[in-house]
Structures are given as structure tokens and as C-alpha cells.
Image 1 (cartoon, rainbow, N blue to C red):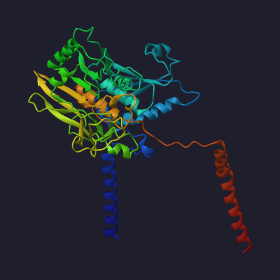
Image 2: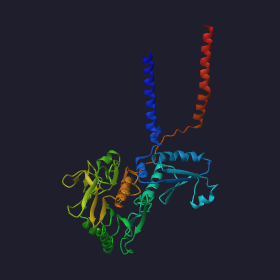
Image 3: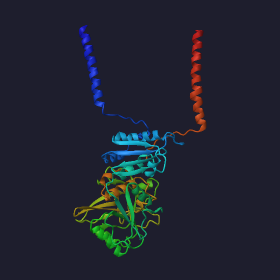
Image 4: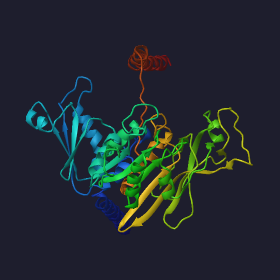
Length: 444
């Protein structure tokens, strides 16, 4: 009997020891389980990486009244929204300020809307008006940049405008760059003596008239001294930029890339689809399809000056069509056409002194135009190119998408049916079943 009691005591002590050890192991750890559709309360990997690039405390101040006529308790909404960020970054603090009780503080921070938040980090501040992960990620990226970046868009020759709203312009891309912390400026070399020394990189986007030789020399001088460049080359003539092409040893063959995969998707055959990317910082872990409309082949002659990487290949089953496309007859001619896959974008790198020079050449200006920017991963790839050219390799990643979550919108009839069904008919049915069972038992 004593042996059995002793065994029971040992088992009890073992269980207690296990429970104490488990509690000790988890005392500093918290587990979370996100049961929402599409993991709405779990941060994107890109956002987590951005938080990891902010060593030190991040302070968030939300300026909101306790109640809102449309949203109700905004404070609770903000607290719940910030919770995943605090879980990922424990030194993130949140303060909630009522702008009616502290009007001077709200005015000093230039608060414009109820629920507006101010993110403060390392002496810099960013305002946040939208409660979504993409807006927060953009704000974190701007806070994380340690230096200003100026992107100069060549102008004066009919180029695609960085602030334009026309279909062929790059206005949407320019606004996305600004939201990521880049500064956009036009570069008119007819007035400027040279490319400014503080330019992170220059963008040449399909001039429509000839660039004067004097301006071309200024660009060439900029490249000779290690300047970075994004060059979008369309099917049109180079309009005076041939010296730059020769300086970079580019091989620009005629013809438009044709991709049968696009026709399988009920799109034009001239919409070349890319799914193969080089092992390069720009395309590291990049697995999105991109679209290059009306594109041309980009190649580089063998030389010892540049380290060349064929960045993007398109038209795995396609070819470079050398015949005119206006006649509507598109067919591969093995005597004249070049079979795919076709390189549509390349990078060139070299060291000049202690500086690493970076250049990206893309055979499609439409690739980043307003009409096509939202297709596939075009925006993501364009932003990655910009970060790489600016030397901010740490920010190269797939941009966070707005997190989706399904909502159920019911009409008045459906709501009435649910109320009657759950609150009246279903309880009445249970009562009726119970009454029938009681009556049968009583008769038996």
C-alpha cells in the first residue's frame, strides 16, 4: 500500500515539475493564432523586414476622439490595428491623444483628420491617414531611409513624364516612388550645366525628338564619372542617344518581341510576358509575372568594361518579329526572326574608384507607363530597380499588397429572415419538440 502511495506521489511530483518547467519556458514568449481569412492580422514578410531595419524605439501617436459617427470606437480600432506591429517590435509604443482636449498639440503636429497617426523614429516623423499595411509599410520605408534620394527624369524632348497623367506617361510610377521616400525632379539639360552631383540616378524615358549633342555629352560625362542610369528604350529611333548606346556597348537589334503566351491569355501577341529572372539583387525571391508591351531585345556586346547581367527574359515560346506588324500577319520566320527566350532588360555594373556604378536598360518604356504599371509585378520590379540603382538594396522586396478579407453584406430581407429564424422560429421549434416529447412520455 505504501509502495502504491509512493508511486502516486512520484507521478504527482513529476507532473508538477513538468508544469513548472513549461511555465518557466513560456514565461517570456507569447503565441498568437490568426484565424481570419487571408491572415488579416498577420504582418507581411516585407513589413516585418522593415520593422527589423528600425533599431531602437518607434513611437506612434494617434489623434482621435473616443467616438466617431460612422466608425464608432476609433481608439479600439487603432489599438487592434497596431497590436500585430507591437508583437513584432516590442519597443513600439502607442499613445492616443484626443485633439479636442489637446488642440495645441494637434495643431503643432498639423493633424488634418480624426484618427490620423504620427510615426516618430530617430528624429523623423511620418503622418499616416490610412489604416492598412501597405500605407504603414511605405511610411516605415521612408523612416528607414538614412539619406535623401533624388531621381532626375530627363525632360525637354517629349519624354514620358514622371508626373504625367496620360496613358504613356510615368505619373503613377512617379507617385509610387515618392511614397517610398524618393524625391522626383525634372532634368532639363538645355538649362542645367550638368547632371546634379546629388542625383541618385537619371531616368531616360523614350525621347520623341533628337537630344542635342551638347546634352548627350553632359549625360555621357555623368556616366563617365560613375553616375547611375535607368534607360527605357522603345521601338522608336534613339533620337540622338546613339553615343550613349555605343558607350554602354548596347546591341539594339530591330524587331518587336512576340509572345504566344499572351494570346493564350486573350491578350495581344506583342504583350511579352516574363516569368524567368536572373540571380540578381533586383530579382532576388521575385516570383511575379511581369508584362513588357511592344518590347525590343536588349543585348550587350562582349567587353571587359562592364559586368553584364541579362536581368529579364520574356517570350519563352516566342520570337523577335522583324516584319512589320501592321499587316496583321504574325508568324515565325526562321530565316529572319530570332527565336525566344529573349532578353528584355539588362544590368551593367562596374567600379569607378571607390564607387560602384549601376545601370539598368529595359527594352520597353510601356513597362512602367500608367496603362500597364498595374499589370502583374510591373510596379514591384520597377521599385526594385529604383532601390537597387539608389544603393538601397535592403529595401528590395516584393511590395506588400492590401490584405483581403471577405465581408458578408446582407440586405434587409436577409437580415429579417436571420432574426426570425434564429431568435423566434428556431427556439419555438425546440420548444415544440420538447413539448411533444413530454406529452408522449406522459401518455406512455
